[in-house]
Each structure stands twice: as structure tokens, then as C-alpha cells.
Image (tube, each protein chain N blue to C red):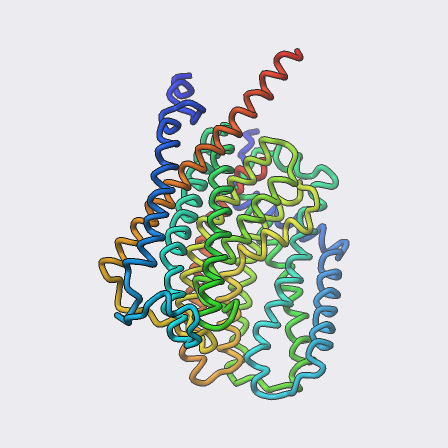
Length: 254
Length: 235
């Protein structure tokens, strides 16, 4: 009994709700700032002096590539947010398996929903970049592959959820898959990276980021994380309130 | 007379013997998996009928072999849990006072044995049908090692997943949907090791052992994870 009392459940109206609106606004402002900064302040990689306006009509590929690099400032923050969403999803999945409390299942599911949203955004931005940088829409490069696998597992997670009716069992299976996915993805990344292959294009990386680039990415990442948090919280409130309304309806019927 | 509870080892052996006995009496799974494997080989034959024979084929053949293994094992895994749920055997198993880990291990072992048996038939067949394309290097026989490693991983994680999907709607599709992405890293490592073994020479020395080590790492982590998580799934 004492254990039950100590167990704090996430619920609507707790302190994170107070942060939701400020987080959303701050996230929007920060990502917008990052967007402006990426195009107007941060110079292109490699110290090349290219005027962004003149570039649009220019057909030189190298200059196109310089501009296409800008998507990095959104791609990476979105990817980080999706990973964080996965990590929290896994955390709540473990909590669920420990306590068998449906609330944690709800949290875990919403984390993965938000994560899937960001994963899809990562894939879209990544594909756009790949198209310009390598000239192809898809290549079996380690990061891309890992992301594809992650996306497939998360989609399978939702398909699995929809094909089990019993709530308790559905939650357990979902939690197991959430944990397996979190274990599997780093392995996938490591394996695709460590196994040498002659087919994959070698991705040349510059020696690091200049302070401006770092700042821009940091700004965008912080903004995206805040947006992700606000989305999570909003969705959580929505789902939780729906659940409570359902419960009330049921108790009224009885 | 004092009754001693059977040891874990005895429980494991009994469960495994039960699975094997049930299978060897009906030969249901092995026959269907074997025929399916043969059909996949036929499909490969059609797919490759306009390919030019040559040494380049070796680079693709390891991957094709693994496609064969994955499809065949999917079929086997789908059925491995179906007799348990059909006749309510699972309830009986769960009522018995045994550790859920033992059920997992025995089920995984029986899946591994069936998969290995099918591979023993299918891989030589594959060789017979496609040896006209290109002769593998003398290290080719070493593909047994990644095959074993891959089968262990497939049986381990596959047992967990098939237990879950046995009680879902549309279980065959569900298993494939979960199994393929989750097995991807292992598949990648095994295809790499197999190709290294088949091509031989420098490629072999360069990549074979790395790929094997990574595949083994996946096996260990994933089997441990499934073993721990099986407890929750089976209840």
C-alpha cells in the first residue's frame, strides 16, 4: 500500500502543464530565429563566400550543395528530438512493466507518437539533403539505414497496438517493442558503420563546426526540443482528458 | 516418499523433447519450411534467369542466401506458436510451476533446431542450383559460421516476437512487420560475413571476423533482452 501511495502518476494539471505554453512560444521563436540565422548570418561551409540571392538562378552544383547544407540546421535538431522521444518512450515502457499501470503506457505511446512525427520530419529533411549532396534519393548509408529501421519499428509498434484488443496485453506488448526498439537501433547504427563495405559512398565530414554553426544548431535544437515537449504535453492532456471523460461516462451509466 | 521438484535442466529438456516429439510425429513444420525454401530458390532462379554468370554473382549470392533464410524462418516462426495456442497448451504450460525463462529457452532451442534442419537441406540445394553462376572461394564453407550465428539470433528474437504476435489479429503480417526491422542489424552482419566467406581472399581477411563479432554481439544482447522480457509477454 505504501508503495502505491508513493507512485506518482503523470496527470493533467501537474507542473509541466504550466510550462507548456511558454515552451511552445519559446520553441517557435527559437526555431524561427535559428531559421533566419541559418540563412542570413551563418556563412556557408568551407568559408566560401556565396551570396544566397544570386545562388538561386545558378546551376553550379557545388554552390547548390553549399546552400543545401542549410537543411542540416533543422535536420539534426529534429533527429535529436526524435531520439529523445524514443528514450522517454522506453523509460515509460520500463515504468509500465514495473508497475503495470496503464498511465505509463499512455505516456509511452504518446512519446512514440511524437517521436514518429519527428522521425518522419527527419526522413524528409534527410532525403532532401541526400538528393542534392549525393544526387540520389536514397543510399544505404549507416545513418539513413538506421533511421529507416527506426521508422519501421515505430510504425510496426503502432500496427501492433491496433491489432491487440485487450488493454493490458496491448500495453505489455507495446512496452516490450518500445524497449527492443531502443536496444536495436544503436546496434543497427554501430553495425552498419563498423562493417566495411566498398559500395557505400564515403561521407566526407568537415573538421567540425564553426562557433556560428554550433550556435545556430544549438538554437534550433533547443527550440525543437521545446516544441517537442509542448506537443507531448498537449497530446497527453488531450488523451488523458478523453480517458477521464470515458471513465465518467461509464460511471454515470452504472 | 519425498517429492523433489525437477531441476531447471530437466524442465528444459522435457519441454524441448515435447516440441521435438510433436514435430517429428507430424513433420508439419519441417516439410512446409523445406518446400517453401525450395520455392524461394525457384523464384530466385526466375529472378536471375537473365543475369550473366560471373564472379560478381558471389557478391550478391550471400545476400540471396540470407533472403532465403529470413523468409523460411518467418514461416517457421509463425507456426511454432500456433499449436500452443490452438489446443490451449499454453495455459497448461503456464499453470505448471516453471520459470518463464525456461519456456523461452526451450522454445528458442526447438525453433533453432528446426531452422538448422531446414538450412541443412536448403543451403546445399541453393549451391546445387546456383553453382553454375560462379564458384565460391575455398573459404566458402565457412559460411556455416554466420549461418549458425544468424540462426541463433533469429530463433532467439523470433521466439519472443512470435509469442507476442500469436495472440494478435493478422498475426502472420504482424510477425513480419516486427521481425524484419528488428533483425536487420544481424542480417546485415551475417550477409557481410557470408559474402566475405564466399568471395574469399583479401575481402575475407578484411571483414569476416569483424562481421562475425558484431553479429555475435547482437545475438548476446538481443537474446538477453528477449529472455528478460519474455516473462511479461507470456503471461
